[in-house]
Amino acid sequence: MGAPRTLGVPILMYHYLSEPPPDADAIRIDLSVSPGVFGQQLELLVDEGYNVISLVDLTLALQSGYTLPPKPIVLTFDDGYRDAYEWAYPALAERGLSATFFIVTGFIDEGYDGYLTWDQVREMDAGGMDIQSHAHTHVDLRDRDVEYLVWQLLGSKEAIEARTSHPVHFFCYPSGRYDEQVIKVLHSAHYWAAVTTKPGATQHSDIPYELERIRVHGSYSAENLLSAIEQTMTSAEESLANVEQAISYKEY
Image 1 (cartoon, rainbow, N blue to C red):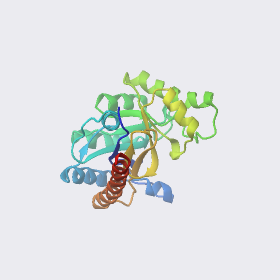
Image 2: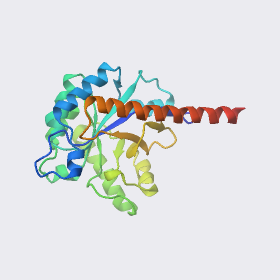
Image 3: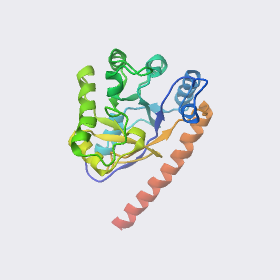
């Protein structure tokens, strides 16, 4: 593993991929990207030379120096809504791309309306999509005892692995809320890393359970998203430059 590594890699955070219903509140509207706009965003990212990588690729790069392609980017979807199967999966597959889908296993077990089914999860997994954990129920995990966290974190991990036969290495904090106890249980349950809702694209090998992401707002056109990525990457590059300067001073 060697010395700590810091990389500038954007991780996009999507939620709904559908038009919001007429009675949608401001939050639902903000979290909703239309399928047509999503397709345009994918096309523009590819045209601009971005290469979609997985969280495994990012983790290997951070922890062992694995070489990433130019302009790497990670695509993630939170919550496991049904429209992930209806729109995101086919749009990605059509372009030979993949994304990570963080699912709430309890919602699927209970057959909640508007969420994925296990059959759809298995189909997406077989089609090259990456299925990871968003806990067993979508609750605030802070200030919980270890037994409860094990049920939420390890239980959801094992539920996904039992259906897909693929290992679950990554976690997404419900509503972005976590504390040190959650991180300790994630580590003990053999999760490799976790994504947050903290804005940014500066990823650190020594804090793998606090990966930064870029929220994709419902109002974003393809050009808006590209601008948000470029602005965030500028900040990441400045952060990287500061880290390198601090290292050089220390070595001197």
